[in-house]
Amino acid sequence: MGLKIYINGKFYSKEDAKVSVFDHGLLYGDGVFEGIRTYDGLIFKCKEHIDRLYQSAHAIMLDIPMSKENMTEAVKKTLRENRMKDSYIRLVVTRGYGDLGLDPRKCGKPTVIVITDKCKLYPQELYEKGLEIVTISTQRNIHESVNPQIKSLNYLNNILAKVEAINAGVEEAVMLNSEGYVAECTGDNIFMIKDGVIYTPPIHSGVLRGITRGAVIDIAHLKEIPIKEEVLTRYDLFNSDEMFLTGSAAEIIPVVRMDRRKIGDGKPGKMTAKLISEFHKLTKVDGVRF
Ligand code: PMP
Image 1 (cartoon, rainbow, N blue to C red):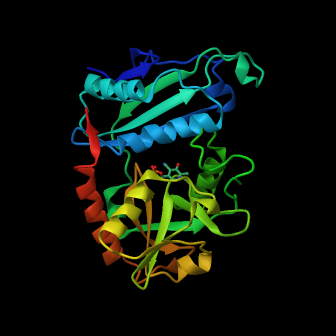
Image 2 (cartoon, rainbow, N blue to C red; image 1 turned 90 degrees about the vertical axis):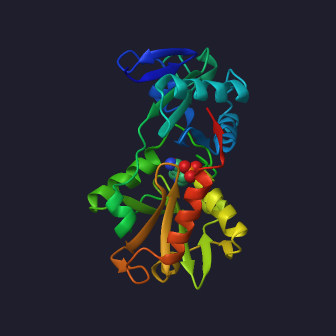
């Protein structure tokens, strides 16, 4: 049985899962999305992802034509249809079919798409040895233009940064905000540990309110590990003891080199390892069964 993709209430094979060339998701990147993980039959942090999808949509004045409950049902149905217990879900809502102008009022009905796929993690080796990253020159979008909290289909800001990372021969890039403070990576939030305290940039530094970021903050509180949301500079990262990135696809991945500087002793840190193990425990319980 091939992959089945949900589009507006119907299932299509991979070959037949198509949207119109007049869809403003394609023409303008006008839409929102979520990347969600399932672990052994549980949709991890399901409510948080659905809530964030609706908040992104609300921010761009896109009325999703179904309730959150029905959206959750559509995701569950797609997972059952594909018999995937461990997967990556891409939930997409575009502005829909319109004309060639920008005007979203010309778009009749949003397009709702649910795709399930195999998990897309970094190679296992990088979890064991740690990732090398670089700072790049493309600044993170500013709140006043495209707020980084909106998980929109317009990812060119991040793609430009990713291209710079690839050109530098590494997988990920640190993006700074317009003031030069650390924001986040191209598809992950960033954390550092110094003297037993975990730090991550606050949302106002220009970051997506990552759901994995939130899970790490919750774990830290639960385990009574001090954690601070603080404005960070590259200097702070260079001089940290440990560093790691978080994201639904990446989970928690250690960083051992940044801009050719060794982070800590250049090996994945002990506290990071503890957080990874606590995170894996959480993925077994914090979700909605499908
Ligand atoms: N920042 C950006 C720019 C992202 O696209 C993502 C999601 N891939 C994240 C951070 C991590 O967010 P989450 O933990 O909710 O996946």
